[in-house]
Length: 301
Ligand code: NAP
Image (cartoon, rainbow, N blue to C red; front, top):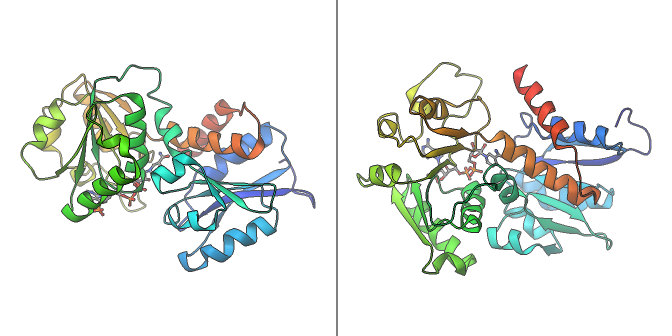
């Protein structure tokens, strides 16, 4: 999109808030490179308006939508069809127009999460996931697909932890099979130290460590579970933080000092966006490198 004309089509993001989203930067860079006459906009939408806004955007011939917090679950009800993965996760992050004037609901978060991990062998390995919210569901489905044999979810609230485990197992019977042990543990249980020491991959799926306008300096409350539990981290363990601002997070910095390999959330963001763009455009190849450069440039300034 070099210039918006009367023919320019709309694609965009629905969520609340959306004003800090990197998706417009990433998607518009790719749209321009692909010479699509589209413009990607971040559109704030309150929960009470969602069920009116999604069908209205379809009426306006919107070419595709991303859905973010807090609408990923609720947006399912505005879709005529849902992909098997979105159904399993109970959440959509991508809506694609069908030929009958409806939306198809899909989920590309798992594909994004897997991108930095998929060239390694994870069969038989153990993972710890911090947090049991929306993104933890895509993370667990991804870890299951990679062949992990034990996944331990760390929660801070016993009720949300238990209901998360119940939801996961009822929507995905494979998680109850005996080759994979999916279990929950509270953040303050002493045996969490053993889980952390023996795991091959630890994923932070909490917002702890995310940059906000008020906090720039190092602050130990920015490290999930606090600083002390990470002092005996095994240097073979890989740390994967879903957060991408700041880069690196305090937790990844801490892990680096212990000799651990670190992965941040930027590649996940780019790859889930690239997967959405493939679905909207019908193109197999999208310019990932252009998307990555646009995101990195934007974050540097
Ligand atoms: P969410 O649904 O709100 O879940 C957050 C989870 O973290 C919940 O289990 C919550 O526990 C826990 N939590 C929140 N504050 C905590 C704290 N101070 N200490 C310990 N646990 C805490 O959020 P989400 O959608 O899963 O997102 C989580 C993070 O992943 C966010 O930072 C988000 O930006 C990032 N993310 C990145 C990407 C990407 O593409 N890179 C994609 C999705 C998400 P309670 O249930 O007790 O509140």
